[in-house]
Length: 212
Length: 130
Image 1 (cartoon, rainbow over the protein chains, first blue to last red):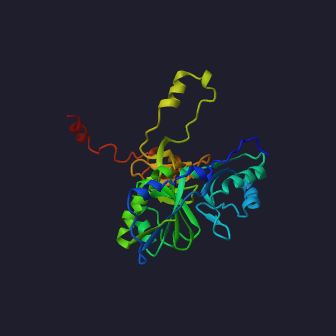
Image 2: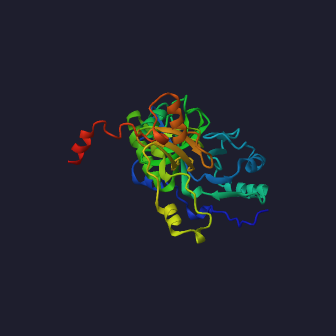
Image 3: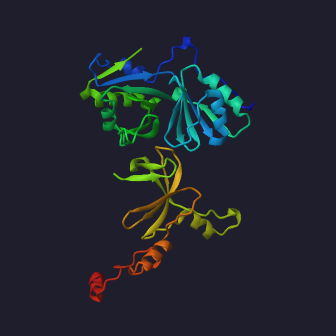
């Protein structure tokens, strides 16, 4: 067991946590619901984001044991579990992003720390620092083409790929866990900028924002 | 713009994602307390500025955030290779000069482009001085 002190960063429900896009939603009227919209935007707020760093060989076994997913060792790849809820993404040769449904991250963090024991690794909860914007629809790829210099053509960006790249004038993690489903993992302070950029870029195709 | 191959991401990425970080393969004096001021000054402040092959340190700052090396030609900006930290370059000024000699091209010393540096006609020099 490691000697790192652990604590649950997630506030309890009474505090009324706000997603990074709360202000954006409140500030401007969201586009009217449109069944014909080319792009559908949705924020997957309050998910559990963990950054896992260390050697792939050291981490692989623990990750498979705790999460049941193989650690993606190839660059720019993404491993998703059978339900499509939990995922691990390669960020750099010694860094991975684990994305789980909100509320699970502390349990997972404890389990991973326990499994890894005294190994040389780092595990940080970054859930409060970023959010996930999901892009769907027949024109989602067109919208991305306007926004990022990265090649999003199916031959260059198949399902199961994820990259950290330039997006508009900021950077984010762009990934495609399923066909016709793009996830944009943005920093909290850039969330409003990216959201408004997407609304503007997708306006010509018709855009809908799904809100819970 | 142009694309740079990141040896860690194993693919070509947009130039915007990278930042140059100066000359590569700098040797820190093994014993800084006991080295001469000249040695330490050279290490801290003085960098090569060759015309020709230059080994540079770059960082993939937006992508994987890893440092790596680029062998670049400073005259035509061609990127000859990129390689990971801790590796040795396979293309250097010496190997390039050897290739040129073998292929019968007019020899340039140490890969530096010296051809054309000196005007054929002495009159051009005097003209330049005037």
